[in-house]
Length: 270
Image 1: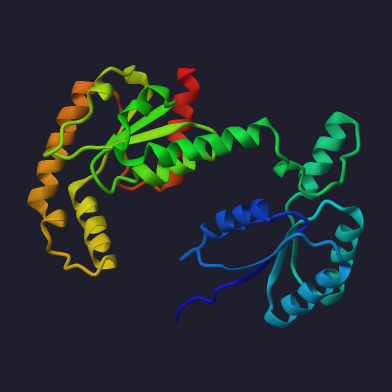
Image 2 (image 1 turned 60 degrees about the vertical axis):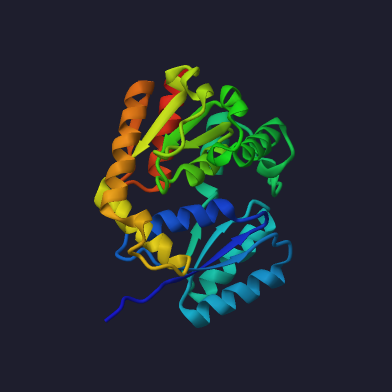
């Protein structure tokens, strides 16, 4: 029998991204990792909280919340307790810990983390950079990049570029294809700036087959053939050896795991 998919209401007086991230991380620790998320953002009225609690009770759901306005927090806690609805305070314990260490009261103002500060603009700049210099579009941007990702098709270069951009790193990526020589600018970079991505042939074969299916093509096209994959990986390994760069095997890694390795590498480099 398939396991039940839990329902979780994400309640926030801001966007709710923090609670959603925590909920998904927790769900991943269980078989399947499935969760039905219902995000209720920018809450500023207790009537909305009452509606959420009523729905959660009816559906045997959990409520996870990042509400910082005291009146809303207290009302939600009281209403959930009265309705016997499981309630998880994502923000509260951390606020209390900061208050204890700093000896001062929090502002209790929603959305402060999303204000337009320098960090926000650096993130936007990095995202624009990743889009502009994706897939080797303009090799002139390689010198300006913090990290340059290099690898064959379907080694998660673009998703990694965007993920790292959200961490304020300017990332460019260059595909390695036997028929197309890498740009000269790549070989002029500091090798510490370059990260090569490699993958097992069997894993790449499965990924490419799924890609072909999603495009409505037959999975036996040369793009996913073992012979073509072997040729590309052999070529790529030669280029990576020539570059002398850090190489990461992404075969069994999620984008977040590979990104964490690159972020640690970039921090040590600095």
